[in-house]
Image 1 (cartoon, helix red, strand yellow):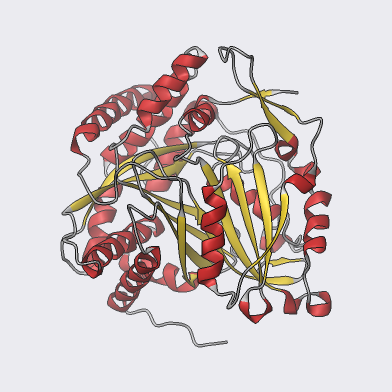
Image 2 (cartoon, rainbow, N blue to C red):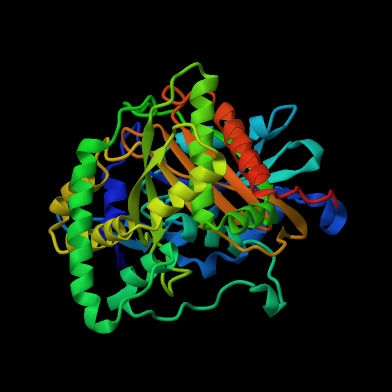
Length: 456
């Protein structure tokens, strides 16, 4: 049965251009020496993906719309589906380090997907140093948000028969749609959920306040070197840390995990500007996505809202920065904005298709924010692919129009993976930014009094 794209999914199609690639993706690295025979080949990976395609029917569907583009856009089965048009085999040049892998990831994310076939690709990459292999996955943002893309990656990993480890999630349970937005936003921000009697009035008031905040943000987003007209090229840089250390830091400081991510972003950006010989802007405005995937863990499409947050880049201790961010992120304003955007998305669905596209573009207008910072949670147990041990994963997020930088964090397999995705003319030397984020995390860890774990 054909499924109609949601208004938000349609927006991600409509804002795409030769310089704006609305694609999400990820890089995962594996050690084949732990698998059967100590090897993992492209043919092995190809067979695994094909054997599990039936679990994700969207991977066999393409887009369809009437010739006049007045009616809804739908997902329909692709009668000519050929998995070999989506499964690629690549090899890195020597020395096959992270820099070469990130250069390949940047090239892959710079290349638009063909609209006449299912909107995804998966690249199996050999030639990494130490005999490692990698998988780079890419899909159109209209097809999935970051969490759905993560579930796609997890689906090809080895099944875990031990239920105490979580395994792959079963069919999602239906959630109460009437309180979806409030429950998800309050859950993320650790805010109390109001009683049923006050819910409707409270949501209306919150949505009104949030709309006002969004409109004022259009005028207040600062001018920074991160913003400007995008070119077609993308660049990627990555950094990772033990997840147990990151958890210990945010618990010791009494802030949320998302607060920790925003704090190391602020500290990293300040260092990045100074190391390039630039005066850091006093603040940057960040769009922070909020998942509304309540009871829909395996659903495709986008189930997100967002709020805007100003990050102060002024000099202060890393711990003070984290606590200041925590206070701002847990404010009523952040919750109101997330509720407002989610409700605006739903109201947009009542408009005719051309008006949906026009209204949707306004929600991602240039200069509404300076960059996007996203935090995605994956399976934390040890993972493997056909016996090859999972080493690290990094999420790749698209760039919004006029925004040259996106920073994404993924917790998966016991590793905190951070990826910088950028337009290299606006944000040159992304490796420098990744190093600056690593230094900001180190400062925060030391101020929290957390030691690195002993080598195993």
